[in-house]
Amino acid sequence: MAPAALEIVFRERSEKCSILFGDNLLDRLPLGMFSGASSLAIVSDDVVAKLYADRLCDRLSRQSNTHVIVMRHGERHKNVVTVLEVAKRMSDIGLDRKSAVIALGGGVVGDLTGFVASIFKRGIKYFQAPTTILSQVDSSIGGKCGVDSDWGKNQIGTFYQPSGIFIDGSVLDTLPEGEIINGLAEIVKSSIVGDRSMFDEIDSAPEVYFSVQKLKSLIRRTCEIKAKVVEADEREKNLRKILNYGHTVGHAIESSSGYRLSHGKSIILGMICEGWIANKLGIFDDGEFFRQKNLLLKIRNHYRISATLDRKRILSFAVLDKKNEKGMIKMSLPEKLGRMHSGDDGGFSTPVSEELFLRSLNCLKKELADASD
Image (cartoon, rainbow, N blue to C red; front, side):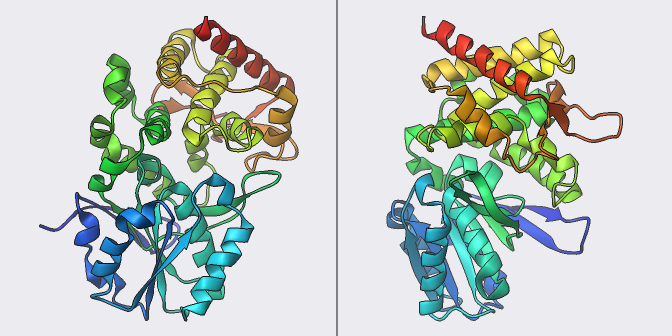
């Protein structure tokens, strides 16, 4: 049976990207998608490669000569040093401008592989085979590629669309328990941004969604939310900014921790802060704000999320955020669960003062302290 598919049609140009869904998809990928490739290379990390690289290599080798490139795992290796290592390996094995690469792994592997593909010989085709909930519902979709730097997360990168995305639900069966929060955070964010009914489902029984099997039921819906936004605004000129909800504060917290605090945990804390900011600005009314906050705190308590909140250090990363304009911190903020706020000019960016940003961290610190009592 052919895999179920969701197609992203980019409105600003004629290209498309297919997202395929199905269990054991790595064993039955449509080989015609790789028919134009002179050779193939799978890029994976040293954890995922042991689990799935041979399976995928066996399948792809039926179409073309296929290599496996293994990088070190973890956010701390998502940097320009690893970019050069992977690019050098690609050159050593003889990849040319008609070759293609497949990112097999989580967000780190996908972001870095896409970036390398966008610059190797001025750009070669690549595909995404995400192996975590986070990468399946978020980072593999939309073509944001890049690496971290000393001055912040994803500060060096490109927009470069994959030629296909393969969402294999069966690979999530080996997902470590600690990875669940990363996917759950992005699913909750997506519900706040664009699907109130999904928020209601999660809010009605959040403990049910602390398992991989239950979260699987929300993967396609979450992908559809992001695909719809990316179709309309591929390069984040306006609408796509709504997908950054929770990420200005969240990325700053994550970066300030030296990436010891995971992305998902950081985004949960970021949404608590940014929801508070929206409420204080009169954008997000009390009832909606408290529903969101209560759900996020339930998730926080279940996963025992804690952080050292060095306000000045967090602010130092926030002022360098990619979304800022003319030195002003900019955020996309909710006005209702399932709908984001737009200004009189139709823009989805709201300026936030450094004073209000710091006050939100004080509020978060108090919430975490109260939850620990």
